Image (tube, rainbow, N blue to C red; front, side, top):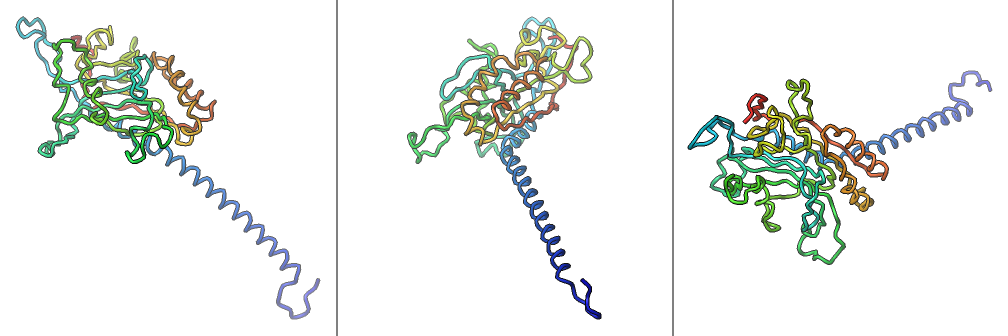
Length: 344
């Protein structure tokens, strides 16, 4: 259609075509904005779901790096000395522990890892000690699988709703003025090397120096490792704690190799792994998550199989459509003075 001579406007066809193009562009733009918004909301939602676990992981690695033993050299026998060796009044203990199911502790070999140590955190419940910023505390991390009845506000009552079972990452913070590591001497009758931990954890509910650090943490793994500089044949990273156990108060069973003797010396490196699930999975897949304890029975017993064992746990969670996230890193313990030449 030809425009009349001197006509400066648009024809009807041109208006229709341009309107159609603009409409198409608007539809495409709206679709792109909608998809971007959905992606952002999904990503942000997942970040929020695992924020508690990520913050807890950061807290563990930060605090673990400050562990101390304050070791010193002394005679092996004050009355009849034959040699000089490392000594310390402090302790470091990590490895598999018993599983806590509600108020019942089931003594099993499930690899529900825990770690306990002393650190100069300066934590005190006594106002007079507030200025002692570098005073020693006993710190620790472990898992519990228990109902939420003890965590509910009292006004809700115990029978208002069915209890919700959750995996909970617990943090132990023993204040300076009540360090059980000093109340138990190695020569005490019945001393079992772990009394400095069990004395605090066996206190009545509400009196234990422990609190929930994060929920929905289904696995916590600590692997003390040989430092890279010492990983020469026949030693590998896993040689230091082949069964994941590291106890500075033991001289024999933890490692029969005298070059890897953990007695009174901190592990130089600890690999920390945390596996968390989201709250939605915890609600929808309660029975599946309860089965994690059965899956873990044969896992994380040999440090050489760490990667394969972690893959088995991941496969179980993926197969059952559980949304999860794994956090892992190597923590360098700054106070460690690792030596492979001292054998006592």
